[in-house]
Length: 330
Image 1 (spheres, rainbow, N blue to C red):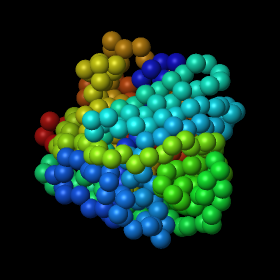
Image 2 (image 1 turned 90 degrees about the vertical axis):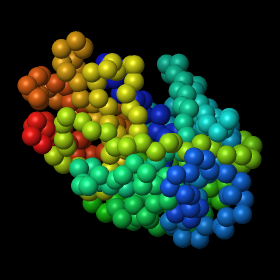
Image 3 (image 1 turned 180 degrees about the horizontal axis):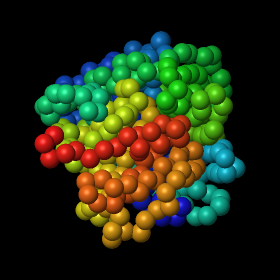
Image 4 (image 1 turned 180 degrees about the vertical axis):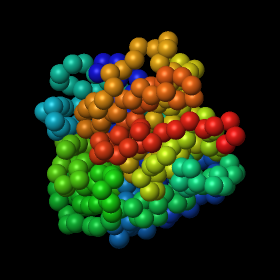
């Protein structure tokens, strides 16, 4: 499992993932920046979808320091968090205060959500890909049921509960508690197919949240990548993200692709078996995530296929087993 951890992003990267914002604050398809000061004049959210939108914008545009606790299958861990924006780039930092010393840093921009489902034809022209504020909330609303709960007190702040339940059995649900004053997420629970919380992440203090008085960069438009393999199956609503995912950590022979429905995300790695330290085939647990490893003959070579995400294991297994190699004619 140590090798799996070297190859796959850690679960804490999700804390600072540029999850797609939504429709209320429209941005031109070719926009390169978003001015966070627009949030000052935005109307107060009323519906569940509006609260969802506001929380995602807040995650990009507020600078803060916080202390938090994570409750998962491996017990309770405490950590400190910070988020800031410098020269249009977000910087998120998480550092554990107990257990093995661990720290994670993420530098990012507002991402883009490809609105065309993976494998759909024709592919979306690169210039037509919307920035995530333009359509992701509607996309999420197609595959989850969003509903508002009452007010509670979290980290000594007023919080509004938001329940996000999947409309099928192919993805997990979430329950969020959002800060009434800023929209920031104060508490989050990941719910499995039975509705049981498998992990809870909660701020215990939120210090000096302040709206960034400037702009945040938006990812540039990129054309969807062409790969020699094709996915035989994905849950409805998951789209291939046109982002650069190659990394020196993986080597040039390893292809990494990301698929998202706007809320849940899965990663796919395909690499030749020769020249790498192979991972043990089967199903592995990585915190609340699972990773499926397959060794298969694809394109005339033995290849390693890894699919991981915070999703039901049977979904990851089906994605890995349905992968096929494109013939030269196709």
